[in-house]
Amino acid sequence: MALIQFKNPIKYRKQAITIAAPEGMYTGQYVRCGKRAPLAVGNILPVGKCPEGTLICNLESRPGDRGSYIRASGTVGSIIAQTTSGKTVIRLPSGQKKVVKGVCRAMVGVVAGGGRPEKPIMKAGRAYWKAKAKRRGWPKVRGVAMNPVEHPHGGGNHQHVGKPTTVSRKTTAGRKVGLIAARRTGRKLETVTKKLIFGAVSGFFFFFFKQVEFINENRVNSPNKLKLNYKIFQTQISRFIIVHLCAAIEFSLNIYLLITPFLFMRTECKSFRGFMFLLIARKFCSRSNLKKISTYCGTTGQLQILKELIFYTENCLYRTTL
Figure (cartoon, rainbow, N blue to C red):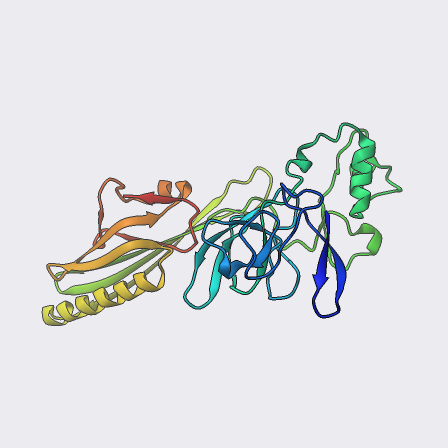
């Protein structure tokens, strides 16, 4: 921390403030504050007056709040861009981008004290005082290490719970330990895969909808079940109506791909010969467990809807490029 004395031009006296010191600040240094301050370490000036790439700290979120961001030891932010509307884009230490007004002030430099959390604790006493400063209950004894009169998980010839840890929300206060009113238990599975098929055979135009679900019963020695749902819609119409209906389906599929960009990236749908649709997918979302139960070829960039068109109902963590 640094104690800085500013000259108050209104009250004609010195005003002392405490602020997080940047690296390179020394005793007796003159600190200038204002929009005319030079760009030097320790000076405070509006972010709108700083060029792009400037390293800053003690950033204000609103003009006049005296600093809200980038104040921890060793942290630093950078100015990314200056907009024409008088706002500044700043990259925070977490990597997040923050847009603030250009009149918000910041200090030039990196906050001193970098590497402070990297120092080894070495002994339990330092960990105790570190936790006590933030009012953390440390050390915290495990319930299975207690006696049965002290905790619901206590007792036994070895340390184990011995019963389900889920408890009701309406249970008494002394037994509310573990998973209180849990909505679900077990590992979370990506369960649903939906397949939509369009086709036309001998004047029959049909829709075929297939849904595959995994059912996890969370029981011991009980395998997961596979549930299949089929829906078939079939109509007998003329070839002229089929062509117009194919155009309508092509338009609706393009709209569907536009409103769901997380399913298919850079994808377009085109009709072929009036009876077949080609889904040109240059990038799509998939997961390994869904790949095993789906039957499409990953080496080609065209998926024929006469065979199958795969839609994924959940956001995918991994993206695969065709």
